Length: 381
Image (cartoon, rainbow, N blue to C red; front, side, top):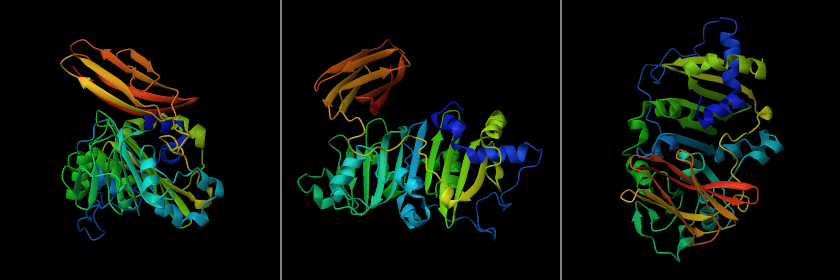
């Protein structure tokens, strides 16, 4: 488990997986099948399964890179179960997208959003594209001229971030992730969707994509990991997906950490992966964002930057375009031991490389003790 999500599963978010290990493997019992013997995902009569309409499958384009991090929150579902959830749990659930999408939503809803769902995907947990469903007013951007209009979406692609706005959905794309056009093609035309060519990601979406909250990592070498919570009546159901060869590696850890906290755990093999499910009473559910909390505006460090990769000169130039609330901007390339620090608009750092070098440049805005990734880009010379 080398990826971020797999480390977080080890750190405690994967209680259900741990309980399944303790309950199903600790006594030498055979894994349970979770009820159905049908591995095709079809109906109980053997008919084919209905095509998925999950926002995750619909909007995630093939152009997304690997590793890929996916995060989803069904906020309409949260409101439906609001009376059953504890007050302290409700306070922990973020009702807004991450920046820069949060500022866009504020502009489109007069600062009072009632969002239906938030989907985010990209090469890092806090960067890439976000698709936000909820009632919006595109006319609030009337002072700006859209670059294009596509199937009812006003498209503003000439600045960072790129956005597409309809009365029901907002798409925000930042550097380092898929382009706005890629996301629109997948979502509106149904072409070049990632799951059409990536059965490992399809496995995650199949088991976790319809949940209230989900976090997924599609890593390199066909490795996957994910966890979800579904609010259902008086219960909160947890599902976890992990590589089969990771199960025995974490058995002792989960037995020690969680013991018999979860009952009625099922553990289902899915090829070389394992899906574990369990449930807790809904009033015992505690929310934890595996990819870090979405801070309210003003709490994240904010800055605008541009990253220019020059293959001919073998250089990566990072320039500050806006300081926001940041005290400084830090530039890192951990793979090649390069770094720089910028403190004013217009200041630029140029990282130089030899032929054959490759890696990823990450830019972090720093405001006091708050550090926020604001941009990144990969290169190969």
